[in-house]
Picture 1 (cartoon, rainbow, N blue to C red):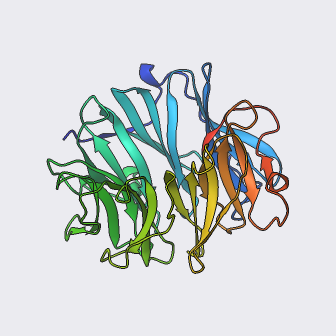
Picture 2: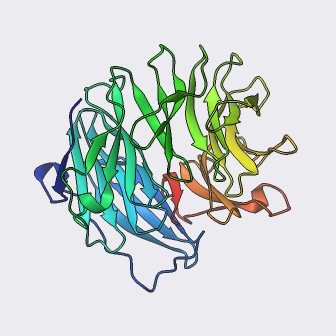
Length: 359
């Protein structure tokens, strides 16, 4: 495996066109559920944006004519933003920037690059998968970045550590809410299974132990369960299991449609997911204790990428219902028809994807 090189974020020839706007100030609100980050990639310009929902403003965090922006994710304390830039299948970078713009670094590597960066609950570490080859199918490992060390807020020998380092393919890391474990996907037994390990890379446990394909793990905020996607029912459905043992496994979607993208509500009582039960992808809400499922979006377009607000009152999602791919907000407790509960984040037809709430 290739190791990343930690270097300051500077405007190299490959990075020409990226513009960081220092838009964060003390005047901007920071209450949970008011700030939403999303990606806008068009044929002419690519942007990483921050929507101030309280003021109805949208700020540009980064802009490029050469690179695509992927996988933005805020640290739980709201001080740092990590995201991926991709210039080609052979060149990508994981960028970490501070809220005030004073600290910016990038982790650069050849190959397909970084996938799904995820923050530790204490905001000090960033886990991600890295494939060192030149194809998307290349084998990857789970890496851990010490962010204070990387940003020179403390001294250390090496801020980067390979946690898995196996001949198998490891991807999709997620943190346990207590910060003691990382769950991830590995194909070391031939098929994709979901494993859990300590944050030092030791004590692997195969949680799914199945000949089926299991992937897209999501840890419940209360730490007790993991939801994931599996084809063990001969189609892709949502399953839930005990987080540390894999016991108490159950199929929670239970139909012949295809289900993807599970996302927990902040109180761990609900799951959202997308399903093509109606012929196109819609967003559904599952109340776990009652095993009750309802369609939240009810539209003949495709709706996907649901993301819960920190206060659990809204879901941001992506839809092509207005002739372009845009970000919309859905009020969970609206109480009227689905269309009355849904509003676009942008009043113009600005394309958007990958909505992520700032804590």
